[in-house]
Amino acid sequence: MRVPLERKPMKAIGFFYCWNGRRELDGYFGQFAQAFAALGITLEIILADELRHPDGSIYSFNPLVEPSKLIGFVNAFQPDFIFSINNAGMTARLERETDAPILKWLVDDIPHLFFHDGAPAPGRAFAGRERIICYSSTLAGQIEAAYPHTAGRVGFVSHGTDLAGKRFEQADAIYPISFVGSCLDHRELPRLLHAARKHGAADQVLAALEALRTDYVSGFDAVAATPELVRALADIRYTWLDFKRMLSDVLTVQDRMQGLLRIADLGLHLFGNELWLDSLCCTPDLAARFQFDNPVDSYDKLLAVYARSKIAINIPNVQNQAGLAARVFDIMASPSLLITQAHPDSDLFRLFGADCPVPMYRDFDHLRELCSFYLDNEEERLRIVAQCNRLVDARFLPKNRLAAMLDSAGIERPAAPAGAAALPEIVPTSNFHAIPRSLERLGPWAKTAARQSLKWTARAARKVVPDRLR
Image (cartoon, rainbow, N blue to C red; front, side):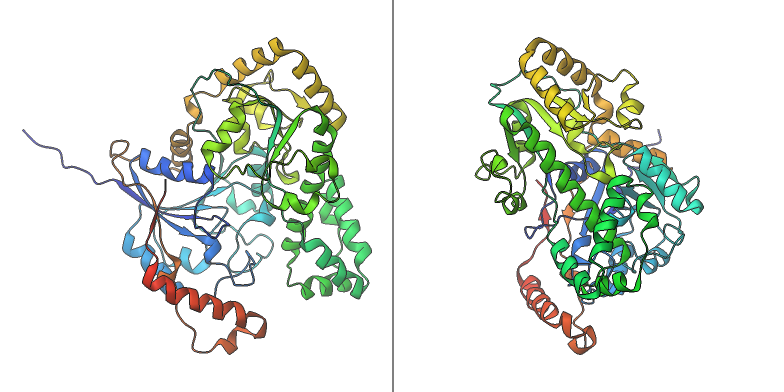
């Protein structure tokens, strides 16, 4: 009798990012990383935010990271595929000097993607062998339109939730209405306006903001890169894509402020990052609603908020209005009623049909009407919650979302049984550091940041060990 050979689990290198000094993935990405192990895939994670330049730009590469060391690590690991979120970690050299299939999962629009080789020339991005999976069907269409050479290599797989298929009893609903979300970083706008005023381009910045507000998809195309505006952007070391990304973040903050203020007196409880504190001086009606002493700093705490809310609001980023953030699935699977923005091309219709029961607001006055109605009509609220709970079935578990991505990208599914792989680990980026011969070549503006990074590298070589995701 022939005994079949035991196959080792698949292996993958993953380029994630975390945007915090603790080197911890956020709740959703952490949950998604563990889906690799659930499918039998051993995952090593490299944090792309530690590969960016000390100036913080997502369109540059950290001069302290030696590309040959990074590529050598990837090749020595011999991954079955390379996985990247938002093009993180991807450089032309890495793609050229590695052989493994590349799967890129895009969860934001083009100005929010990593381009470590610099902002891409028109038509030049995604010109390699990668397969691209977009979290929204609208983004998939935008990628194919902007980069026709990607035809046949772009797919759509939505976010999911660990709550999929579970059933809950409503806990004591201590939050009539909750919103859990970021106040995006809008602090660069004053700096840009000061630079623009110096060069006579302040009106152009405000006009660009209004153009983006009027039509996010095509309005920005008409914005002229005048010499005055280009000089102002150069003063703060911004590319054209940086400019659009910053304006879109400002618009999202404006939307969230206006929407939340409209429902603040209905029992709103606001949860999010500390940047909300910067805005409370100007928005006293939100000050009492922001739960600054109750941080939602874990996935369990996030789910606890939705379990204790009657209504949970989704006010999407302006660039993602037709797509579905991860919170949409968490809320739909919870005891809370989701109310989100209406959009004719929403993926809610693509995934759940034209009769999707989720209440959707046309404007913020309508948002207030919907909140008031469902707070006063508990039976109807519970009826819709039950419908939404049934819609978010096992297809939307993170491991099944990952499996769908692999299938869409044509990557063979793991042969190892689920759970056969080790839990993912984050690789210390100091493994790839190389001390430059002279800090002078970094330029005077980067010397301080580089020296700080060198000190951190010396400490990391002695103390840092791979973090185990929990």
